[in-house]
Length: 361
Image (cartoon, rainbow, N blue to C red; front, side, top):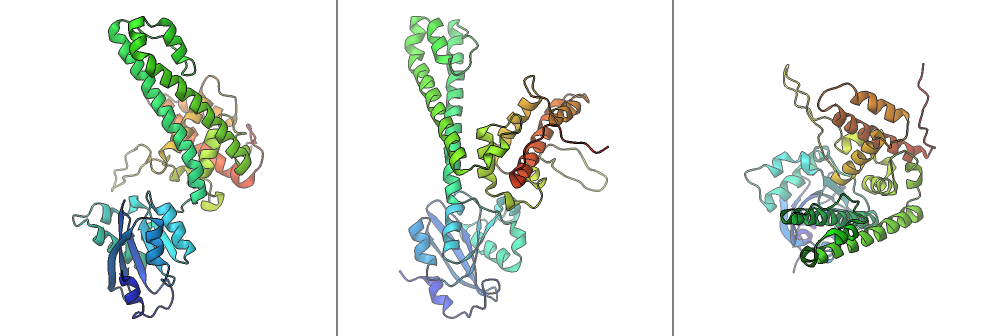
């Protein structure tokens, strides 16, 4: 099949990727649609290609360096990396900022691709470009997400077993998930054991698999991401959180200021100011949900009864003591945000963690 983009490239003189041809791509599960603009903003090519490495290679290998814009999503990580290796300038647009595309009454793959191309041609800052992690980092992060999947399945199975036993008059004893299956088998009658036994076996097997994941994550962090060892010095932060933090952010140079990490992870308040009205709203909950959840769990541990004393713990407890129904929840979120900033600072400097830092008098 003849490449329609190649046909038009011969007719359009390119000065550089910044003022020459621009391509917008609307990524799809099977097919991705593209729209090509020349330096005058005229549409000179439209079509689609297979969303696969071979499809990308077929359509973009013979192109001179151009600017390509696409929405950040499931396929954008490896596609952007492949396009950059081919010499193109790639912009992965923040989907949250593209209200004109996501809420348009003319939403269509071809139209979306053209809008992306026009935004990238006129002012790329509108797209709020996202810095992708590498494919290798994404593969490592998949190990963590697979572990999280098993943990959620085990939690669902435990809750199901407890719920199924109650109508029969049995309330299963409180137990950690590590020994839940063993304790249940000891107290259940023969009838329920026959029905729930296979589920309890699956729970025990999932517990073993989670331990295997934990060991694999520890080996990965120590061997390939040694910078995580500085982060686990912080009280309440473990190997899992440290590795997830490093892999999610991708690079310590991604943020100019450490305090920007809290905003990136959705731990800043939303804003809806209009005139004299400026209500207090909850956090934005943007970006990576799993890392934000881990940081909240770490903050819970820091403020909990078993948390070790530190300046951060004292500050969080003081914030929680102000009173009000949501004071502790606000304190936990605030400590989670402090942790996000602190971890980034330690990552940059690789300095030892000081639990009680000096406060200027």
